[in-house]
Image (cartoon, rainbow, N blue to C red; front, side):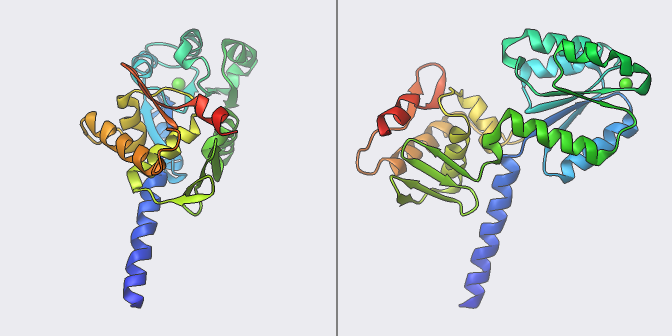
Length: 256
Ligand code: CA
């Protein structure tokens, strides 16, 4: 009996860890000094972030057109394209206009800070810096950029999700979701109203390193809908033809 309980709780803990890893913030480090890149990667990874490193400004520009992380740590002096120019380009594109950027500048470039901030960086840090300081800045900026990511309780309309207890309820009635449906709902609740393509949902909920057919998303959305609306309540998930899915913003208003 006690063995069963132990096994169960271990399984749950490992699922919780996996879910947390899946939902962790993605950080891109654009830096050409290898030693510093290694140090940043190691420390950000230890904090639970999903880290991607790029050594050239032009390569970073290309990658940022394909996939947008949650935050960019951007060195000022880079081969290919300077950090300043990359920052300017990111701010000029609607999809990266709000992307949190921390600029790294060398001591001699301190006078250029103002230019960096004018270009649109959210924060800057002067080299050499302490790793804990950078981690604190990253955390602070992520919190400002998306407070939902760190909230324990997510609520929308009559839906509630408690991250600590991993419980979901609708109008106070508990709903038992499978791990994938739970992560889907958690992701939607982090971005209510926003439409996500199947590909974006696969990247964010399943993880980018796993190859899964996009139709899998439809299957899990279908299951989630069924579980959320057992008695034919209003469907909180909106299908946007040709685009994807969203947590319906009319739903919250209707539930008020
Ligand atoms: Ca550099």
